[in-house]
Each structure stands twice: as structure tokens, then as C-alpha cells.
Length: 89
Image 1 (cartoon, rainbow, N blue to C red):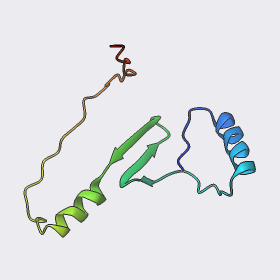
Image 2 (cartoon, rainbow, N blue to C red; image 1 turned 90 degrees about the vertical axis):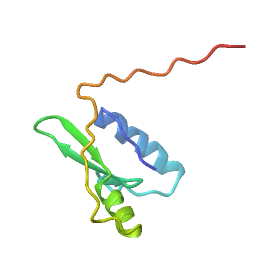
Image 3 (cartoon, helix red, strand yellow; image 1 turned 180 degrees about the vertical axis):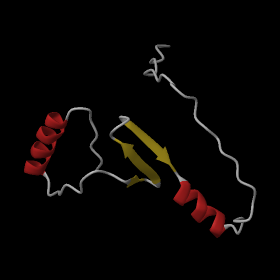
Image 4 (cartoon, rainbow, N blue to C red; image 1 turned 180 degrees about the horizontal axis):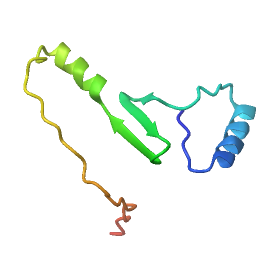
């Protein structure tokens, strides 16, 4: 289970409650999750995600390691909004 949040105190409370109900251990800060590498820059207050290792493993599997690579950047300063529920009933 991956537990994420902005406030450390809340995370600690949640983990304490869960550990009373379930057998679990804290593995610390996540570095990889579902094939996604997670990197933190605390000075810049930034988190970056990439799938480099996963993509390279697919390239090896399908023998396309010599293919030409292209960078595809995500839009900078992207503002994500919650999805609006569809109320057609």
C-alpha cells in the first residue's frame, strides 16, 4: 500500500491506525512504484516521475534498443482539476 500526503503528522496518524488493524511495516520514502521512478528535490520542492527503467526493459525485450529515442515533455505548470461527475440520470 502506498500512502502519500502533504502533512507528515497526518500520515503518521494514519499509519498508526492502520498498523493497529493490519500487520505492516514502513518501507520509508518511495523510490519506485508500479514501474514509475520517483525522484525528489527537496531544495526546489519538486518531485519528478519517469519510467526510464521500464521503457528500457521493454526495448530489450522487443530487441529495439538501437531505435531512435525522442523526449516527450509534459506541459509545464499544468494545473490539474478534479473530474466533474456526470449527472445524466
